[in-house]
Amino acid sequence: LTGSKTISLEDVKSATNDFSNERVIGSGASGKIYKGELTLFKNSIPVAVKRLHRADSYGEGAFLKEVVKLSSYAHENIITLRGFCEERNEKIILLDYAINKSLDMHLSNSSLTWGLRLKISIGAAKGLNHIHSFEEDQKTVHGDIKSGNILLDHDWKAAISDFIVSKSQGTLGYLDPQYSLIGATKESDVYSFGVVLFELLSGRLAIEKVEKYSHPTLREIIDGGDEVKEKKVVFLAWLAARCFEEKKQRALIIDDIKEKTDLRSVDIVSEVAYKCLQKDQEKRPTMALVIQELEKAFSIH
Image (cartoon, rainbow, N blue to C red; front, side):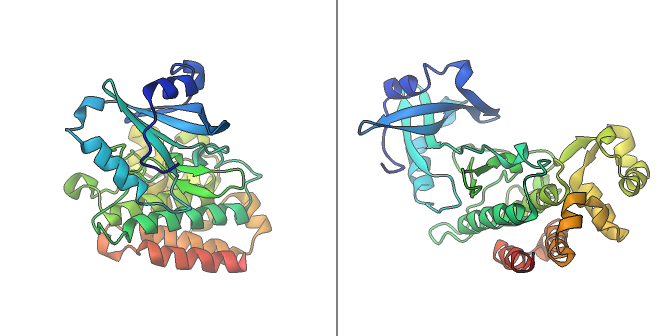
């Protein structure tokens, strides 16, 4: 079964119990995602069925073109496209089902060891680098890198999702400050990936309420920030940058990781994450360089 295989609407409805609310496993700006069971050659395989909103926003032939493009990006760290449906004004894509769902659901999980966090970050970085280095279209970017779009299989292998077809405008907390001026670029993807790395280091989401932060050093930085007082939430990218400026970056790291890990490994990851967040896009590393640093961190962890 290839990514450009057509699945009938009848089969999609059968796979999702007629788009039952009980089957919904995710929802975003681009559409709802359902868990489905697709029968192929007498075998039943689990799939994630993404039913796109704004189905009529695609011009004649545009959706098929996007699907064919997506299937051409095959890589072990990009979620596999299993098929699509374009019927009765419906636009639906069928993807591999990730049994461990998305990374954002596991960030604070203490059983997600430093080794696993590194494995996930390296896999996601390789998937994003594949997108950025695709020879047939040098301008291709993801546009919405976040922990919610990094899916995990039974062995915690990372795969990037929500690519191309979603037409996303990015997500608050992960957005490059330059995004409103120049839109999605490879460098803005790198910025977003830096935020994900800090999520993995800190066990926190990109945006959290102020009261969730109790660490005295972090509270001191937060309480001194005018941005936080007004909004009552903390942007992790802002906090990470403040921590680096005050040379207090280790205060961000999960205690369990600090106690059980070679801190040189942690420092390598936090340094490259900070470089990803540089305001000047030209000072940010490429994803190929990010992979090098993450693999170096993995080799000594």
